[in-house]
Length: 625
Ligand SMILES: *[C@@H]1O[C@H](CO)[C@@H](O)[C@H](O)[C@H]1NC(C)=O
Ligand SMILES: *[C@@H]1O[C@H](CO)[C@@H](O)[C@H](O)[C@H]1NC(C)=O
Ligand SMILES: *[C@@H]1O[C@H](CO)[C@@H](O)[C@H](O)[C@H]1NC(C)=O
Ligand SMILES: *[C@@H]1O[C@H](CO)[C@@H](O)[C@H](O)[C@H]1NC(C)=O
Ligand SMILES: *[C@@H]1O[C@H](CO)[C@@H](O)[C@H](O)[C@H]1NC(C)=O
Ligand SMILES: *[C@@H]1O[C@H](CO)[C@@H](O)[C@H](O)[C@H]1NC(C)=O
Image (tube, rainbow, N blue to C red; front, side):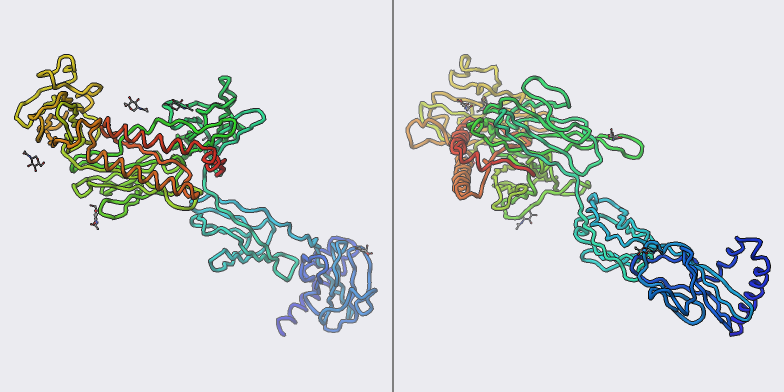
């Protein structure tokens, strides 16, 4: 009380002084502002404004109000019911605030020949319903991301993210996320504390987290007979450096540049600047249906330098439409499905699909499962190899291979955007020496012809020489210069079309005789190996007279496996589970084998012709990812 008295006293002193000079200096009133409480007040339309003089006159006789428009009244007899006394002393309550209430409200208290005055500046805020705010899009996987939740000048906010606790943010409503992930997606509930309003303003913000990705697909414009393929980059800051399209079955592609055309192939899209990459093919032919690969080159700012980034790829399956009537011919499947690998070397097992993959994994011959992961360190026992799942490629490389890895591997592929049974592919792995026989057992018939074929493991490596040892211990030194015309002993020559430079050690025997039945050895020094490598092949007498071909154990089993797979595939396809043909390809092209190739391509073409029905085209139908 003593304190208040002191203020009152001071106030009186000040006021009396001011009263004396009031007539001379109009702006002396500003000195009185200090007695108006609050000095400044924000009120939303429809709310109430409360104001008073900060001190009370002990013997107050009157309390007068001057509105911003100059209307003067005594609070004891207000002109209408919007105004009333708020507290004791000299105070005012204004109800149902309207926009024209903005301005200075003056209060004057009189009593005992003294007068105290003060004013309050009132700012009326429109009660605009917050327009539904736009969706907030955040880049995926970024650190320290600032999210602005409100544009209002709120004094605090309460933010509830999905699946997490609420957080009170003082001042401007901004939250910083340590890392953006899809877990923060959804509706964020925000409560804002805004000036001029007692109740908090609720706000819902939709937050989506978008990863950089390719939007790919194709459009066949039948009216103009044009085929448009596109691969556009979404949610990225990167710029396109090049744009390439390739039919996966062809060795060449198309370099597509905005504004460039060769008459039949031209750029499609809104420009590289808009991060659009596409190709238009005029009058597409049968050859243009099938699987296309698009590759988009990218660059971005790293610090203050522009750096090339790994390209993004996708596979687009173009169905044969009525105009592009039949399904395509694919002769790319011209590879045997056996991998030959030398012990302790790296083993790569791979497979591919005609569509982008979401994931893939491998089943080891002993039943264990391996999912390829990115290579990050030197000690890692296995890792992913290939051009990326988006390009439909799956491969796994093991650092050290042992004999345990011999056997039938199965690759399982989960396609992007398509749920159902995984596509599988079988790969035979043989862990051998540096030189390995393609078939360990070969059937022969007297007077017939056969081929003994050995090849380097781990791909094509040149041989220093090639030799064979017959069951009757006749040694034969041979290379591709020995042909049918100059055959050794008129019966032994190097298999045409093969070469020791490509790692082939291959002997063709015509007019087979009794002496040829038994164990043969092929041997060679493989380039950069210290010792000679060899393998044996058992030639046995076939009970069938002069077979047209010799079925090797592996060839037959692979052939049968492929046939079963295709039958299963066909059944599943008929039931609508499988949409695409199986394809086989190796990173390590294994030695090809005349017989099994022929078998495989026969089987393959059977399956192809079933795929070429129009039904199949529908199954492949237009896809937009
Ligand atoms: C203020 O505006 C209201 C309508 O919004 C009107 O009825 C009232 O007369 C106005 N008051 C003055 C003082 O102009
Ligand atoms: C990408 O293009 C935009 C517009 O031309 C440019 O401002 C930006 O610097 C470019 N970024 C890179 C990495 O080239
Ligand atoms: C498919 O290939 C075969 C042989 O390679 C050929 O005879 C046939 O005409 C081709 N079909 C089409 C539609 O290109
Ligand atoms: C398969 O490959 C062999 C040799 O690499 C080649 O001669 C043959 O033409 C190919 N077959 C097909 C159908 O492409
Ligand atoms: C299968 O082989 C892998 C690799 O050699 C090995 O790590 C795993 O333990 C084996 N699993 C079984 C069940 O033998
Ligand atoms: C041929 O080799 C096999 C093993 O590869 C062996 O079991 C068989 O006894 C051999 N035959 C002859 C005649 O040496």
